[in-house]
Length: 111
Length: 117
Image (tube, rainbow over all chains, first blue to last red):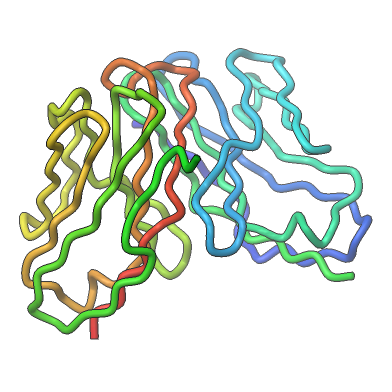
């Protein structure tokens, strides 16, 4: 079945540091890949997505590239801000069911 | 306008009680979901409805009963609440037919934090 594995948190960074949150997946066929973000006290919202191999999703300075050869979709940002502190979820949809989420990675950014 | 709204935001109750959480979406979506998020932030799908028809029913105790009076509403009723039911419950919706479009996006409500004492 489909599954998503992402690095455990919390990830603790200082403002303006470089961020990488690793995500790998197992899926049937050719899934679409997503990153969702959950700010404190809120629901999840879509951050970015990629629907085919080598696509790069980007939004708000975050990027992730769909790597079919390594079955990965790592999230990166060049310079994090305090306001980026949140829980980040990697997810996939192979078209056979609904979204499959990873366990979430908490990011804490200090001034 | 809130796209997916759920009420109440906080729910504190005693073990053994029956409670309901309501969800409404004004996006015109066909598919709605209930997710449970535990204290470690792990998200688990519970139910999915497409046009008032149940299409996903994960391994959830039958004390949990979803009800969809129309495609814009999906309420969650919980009987005989237990301590382990304490969690944040999220409602979500998506456009895709039967929730299985590959690239479809889910819209989430802001969650209901349920505390069972």
